[in-house]
Amino acid sequence: MDAAADRQRGLELGRRWAEHASAHELAIMVSGSFDDLSEILPPDVSDQFVGGFREGVLHVWRGA
Image (cartoon, rainbow, N blue to C red; front, side, top):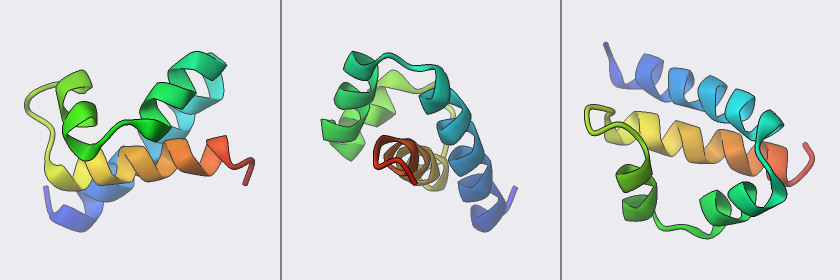
């Protein structure tokens, strides 16, 4: 999978996850570092996926 598609997949999954997450879970994801997120997500995801996932969570957290 190419980087752009992997990032888009992470973005979509991050948004869906964040829509159902508790406020505490959202706070952890938003305040966590890139490395923290990499530890939480499955080990086989790419850096692009992790970046997209975090962006998706931030999008929901900010109410956009």
